[in-house]
Image (cartoon, rainbow, N blue to C red; front, side, top):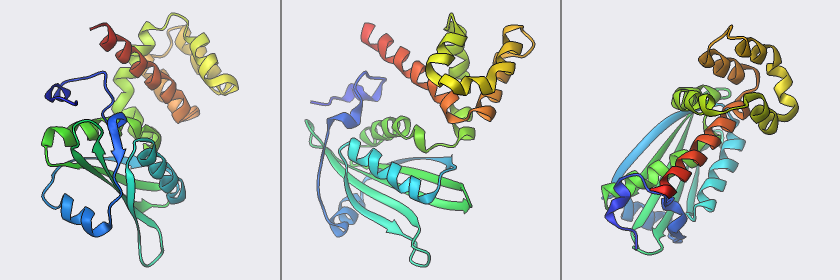
Length: 223
């Protein structure tokens, strides 16, 4: 049974404990009308087709029934996806709406809205889905959210070049000159991160982000 202590950091990934609940759009609207909501927004630099595929994948992998995919009636472009589920053990009904707003070509704003009758449940669902939506975030958004965490992870890596080689493979050559300057203390750790993001993109950042969450999970297991 999922208990109240989920309000504090937990080793449990909340959405791994969901089951899909197939309902109609009308029932979805009725059930979510009075639910508590929590939301977060971030930048996205993918095509709308890529977003639709990624959003559908996130919902299905986290056991949400896709209630509706909303399209702009004029140009048939994706504007949002609605998902519904309930907790496998506590039977709490939870809903997600992932909204997509096209700002310019290749520049979108994504808003994730988590809903539940209990505010703390909505908060936990949003926290979990936010992390699992990192692939949807632009390089700039990942930098803004994780740069300090990446610096902390980088500081603890004994052989940075070996780590980057294992995670980036041939892509590391794009960063070779910058890495040499970093090794010679000509540039800061922060500048290396920014240059890595510029030259390689998300792959550079996600290598460290995955390492960060792996370390966090190991720490929680020891507690």
